[in-house]
Structure formats: C-alpha cells, structure tokens
Length: 538
Image (tube, rainbow, N blue to C red):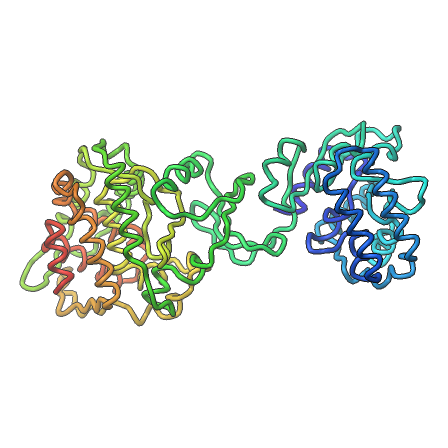
C-alpha cells in the first residue's frame, strides 16, 4: 500500500512520460491547494470575492464557463499581488513521501515528469524548489491568456508526447492527455475508491500509515491512518470468501462498516470500541461496563432466524474442529504420561483423548446458525459489536458455545496472551498481567502418571457471570428442544477447544499438565449444559 505499487507499474513501462497532478497528489491530503491557500494569507476582501467565484464553480458543468471562472480566480491573485506572499504560503504544504521516492526513481532512470495543474504555477515551482525537486516541468496558471482548469489540461500537453502515464486524484485528471498509455488514480477518500476504479487503470492508496500491525498464521490485521483518519485493516485469503461472510453476518449482528476492499485487504471503519472496549478489556483492563443483553439478543435473533439442521462437515466450524484433530493425534504419539489421577478418579489419558477424537470425527447432523464463528473475548466489544469474519457463516451451536466458553474460562486470561502475544497488538489489557490469572495446579509425577493434589481455577466473578449468561442463552432459547441433544456432546467440543487453539505441543510442562487436568475434569463432570451451569455455579 505504498510507492512500491507505482514502482512495479513503472518498471513495466519504463519509457513513459509521467503527467502528474499537483494538489493532493504530489502534496499530502491535509495540505492546502495552490490557489485555496491564499484565502489563509490575503485579506478578507480577497476571501469574499474568491468565495463568490467558488460558489459558481461548484455547480458549473460547462467547460467554457469554468474557464471564465478560473480566469477570474487567477486575475484575483494578480490584483492582490499573490506572488508577494508565496513564501508565507509554503508552510501549508507537505510533499507526499511516496512522491519523493517516485521523483528519485524517475531521476535515476531518466523518466520525464511533467506536472499539469489547474493551480498557481509560481507557488508550485517554489514548493518544488524548496524541496529540492528540480527535475520537473510545471504547467500551471500564471498568465491570463493561458488559463488551465481541471477540465482542459490536455490542451496544454504536447501532442508529441506518447506513452504517457497519468497520475491524479480526481476523475477530471483522466483526460490530462489524449495519448495516455495508462492511468493511475491516487485515492484520497476511501469512499471514492470504487468510483475511481471505474475510471483509472490502477487506483492506489499511497497515504497509508500503519499504526499497529499483527501478523497471524492466516492474515495481517491492524490499525492504519489514512489521510488523518483511522481505519482497521485485515489481509484476506480470497479463497476464504470473507467478504461474502461479512455480508451474511451483518444481517444479524452489529459489525463495523467496510470502507473498501483494496487488493488483498479489507479496510473497515475504525471503531474505538475494538481498541479499548472489548470483552477482554472489561475482564482484565479498565473498562467498567458491558452490555451483555445486546450481545445475547443478537445471538437469540440469529438462532431464531437461521437455525437449521446440517451435516457437520458443511458447517464453517468443521474447518476448526475437524481440521485440528491431527494436533491431538500428534500429541498422543509422543504422550509422556499414562494416567492422570484426580479426586480418587483414574483417567487413562490416551483413552480419553481418543474418545474425544472419535466423537468429534463421527459423521453426524447437527444444528447450526449464522454466527461470527470465533467468539473470543477480543472479537466482541462490551457494546455488542463483532469483528473478524474469517469463520463467519453457518456454525454449529455447540462449537460456537465451546469457543466462547474456553475463552472466558481459561484461555483468554492466560494461555492466549502467553503463547500468542503478537495477537494482542491491538488489545493489550491482559498482555502484561496474564501470570496473575494463571490456574494454579499442584501436582506430582510418579512412574509416568500425573497425580493432581489440588487445582485452583480461581475463575474471576466477571468471567463466571458472562459464562453463565452464555449458558442461559442456549438453555433459554425457544428452540432449545430442537438442539438440546446436540449439547449432550458439549464436553467433547469444550475439551477439543481446550487442547487446540494453542497447540499443546508448544506449551511448557506445567501448562500441558494444567490443560490435561482441565480436559479430564470437564470430560468426567459435564454431559449437558445444565451440568456445566452447575459446575460454574459452584
């Protein structure tokens, strides 16, 4: 999302001449325009007269009349001796760093640059001079007999120039040359991107500044600044159809609006809640309130509107629950322990893990509904907004519940931030305090068996209340009679989720044994949602 995009185009067209606009193409978006800036410098009489002209320009559709109005603008600059104030105007302009890279590349490779602007030529030339940009010809307004408007630039471009590449920020710039080879649009307003795409051969965002960035195994997510406006961005795999999933989920859940789809990125409107007000911030940070009713209501609405019986393999959730079985199988191969003994119960670890695999792998029909698909405490805000739609679509109810349960029960407070720190670039509430929430497990190992003396889960009260709210969501829904049988399998899905979001094989010894202890405990004590409710209640 920078100069490299233009660089690649130039390499393929290295004998071309660049015809480039000035205002907000060479200069940054927050710079003034080379005529408009004088309203900040000259007296109120000038400002009043110019505003009167501008009011007619805005509604002008005639190229001839526009030329007349532009003549009046340039004449006004002459009357008020604008040249005298050029040095005072310079401070209102900044050259886009990407243009400086472009200039250096063109100079090195002897590519001719011509600026064609409807702005004020003396000011443009002085801005270039003070920025050591000497290798550029400027076509602009100065003489009253030669008036250049946004609509007639091509009249002043030498017709002998062939294979020109046009670079501009407005639809009018597309006609800068009659002999253009190709055109590049600089998008200053993300909501104009789709319109520019219909006009220009290429459309480039070259004012993006990355503020925060996180690279995961599947994508890059972060916060960027574009022309002083914050946005969220995410790289996507086209095969994943995330845009289609977004369109599906937004009918039932509160989501941030997509600004544009740009190459391999989706750029979303920035909502501060995702920075400071996620469920994770509520549980472990400074956020004091949560609108759990809004979150639960959205789930109820989707369950009631979209509930359907499907083959499990057809659900989005199958990609995770079936797709990660190999991790448990790999762990079993290298299993260091035979049994886990807790509360006088003896668990054959390998047998339990194989039973979990067997019940997840079993071909079955299962109830599904449209959901976000990865409802961790960092993907839902306290105000009820959802983000990250990679797994959105029809997900099974038990998988959706298992994911949020494990996030609130154990992983969101300790295992995720410990083993996946890079995912907390945006949500930092827990990152320096996860050891405070570690599940304390007092154990010993004898003859290859694990003896649990005491495990202290220390489930915080906020976590407990949220877990109970999600349990009640599924228990109290009017469709519970339909899908209640599915939840007889809930222990297998919770255990699967406990074992796999962070690969157990990369954990240290204490954490591996804690995960195994939690798995055995859930496996032995939970056969229904009501069992889980009773367990959490205790």
